[in-house]
Image (cartoon, rainbow, N blue to C red; front, top):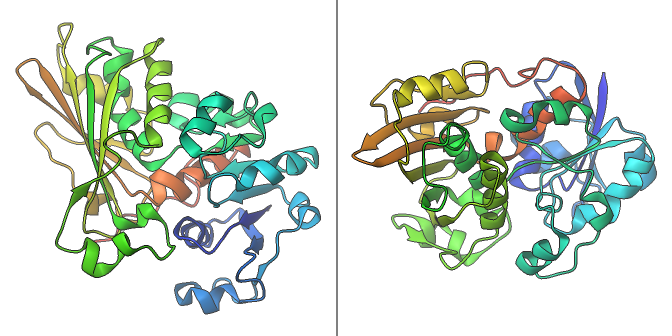
Length: 342
């Protein structure tokens, strides 16, 4: 049995970790922390978990307790994992960070986008970017995982086959993306109120979003050199889900794009290339760790449609996928359930 702890378990990614791990036969959640909710029973805060975690109580973060775990998930705002990750690694605990703290390799660039100095630059060289479809072998050997963001996951998986094959111009990439309101977190914010977000849609971060450097870094790794990407996220009136519409300009004969995508993802358990002509829906991935893709062509323009659940493949499910790889388990363990419908 793999004993794990969760730091920052009161947000949406924290409760999603608990929900998914409750069905994992090889994992036991032994600790979950929250400074603001210490002493509160998990099942009292989240009644959907009654019968699964009735004895588990939120506690203050304690390095000794967490350091005794086999692995610790950080489901925290940026900057929190910096302070504790190094100490846990020294104790032999593996760290899986769902925040942005270790996604960017350049500490100065991280500081520019997140408005504070990087708190653990010495760990950046060790952190493995946890997108299994690109870095599976490195993840298996890793001690520190940087779980990709939700937008970056959907965008990179959509562009991956095209950039690997050299079929599109890397200087003319456009990602038009939509997210449900859970992407903004569980904290009370006026733009996330029902009366503000319902029956409306808006773009945000058009001048530069924090996920932009992460996406550029990942796409650059695929292409082998820097790419130019225009990325515009939008808030849509749904609870969860990411829909990414990705555009690329052909610079080579594409032959059969459907075959290209099907072959690239033939052995990927959590990427579903849909039949030609499909238009995947976000509701088809609700609650599961799957990215569904469809590829289209209009003249010289390639259009890829990519949908994920931002809380699962875009966060907690992908974190568990990484855990499975790190501990030599089947990659799909605990993540086999079908999507919720409707």
